Amino acid sequence: MSASLLQLPPLQSLKIRSNFFNGGASILNKPTTTVSISTTTPSIAPLQIRAMRTMQGKVVCSTNDKTVAVEVVRLAPHPKYKRRVRIKKKFQAHDPENQFQVGDLVQLEKSRPISKTKSFLAVALPPKNSVRTSHLVPKELVIPLEGTAATE
Image (cartoon, rainbow, N blue to C red; front, side):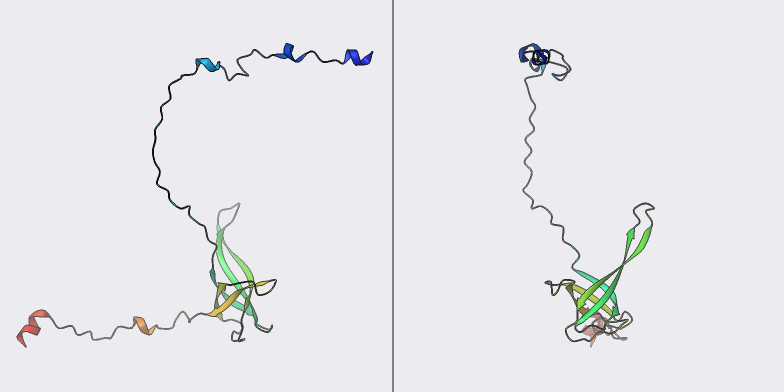
């Protein structure tokens, strides 16, 4: 008896005839002509975003054998206040010759994973105040002029 009370009406009687469900208008009222603009876009390879492969930092610990801890400082905007703040992060780097001491400036180069935490190779950086010999210009630069070269 309770089963007869809970019977649903047949599905054909539930047809919805509202324009709301049809998008406001019937399909036949839509325009049949379409404007097609065929613009050929050149096939450009998608840009690849590559992660930072080198970083510079300062050695903060060199007690382990063939490993140095390097602190890298970068500036990034604060998520809430939008002010640039210093973010420090320590990386373990491979130092095969144990040549770096605490306080040395090194460059970290991405390499294959050497251990669970080591995937960078420490490379020496030249000091900032050193003078490069390739950029030295002699004090007296003698260039003969065309007019003086012809008179001699």
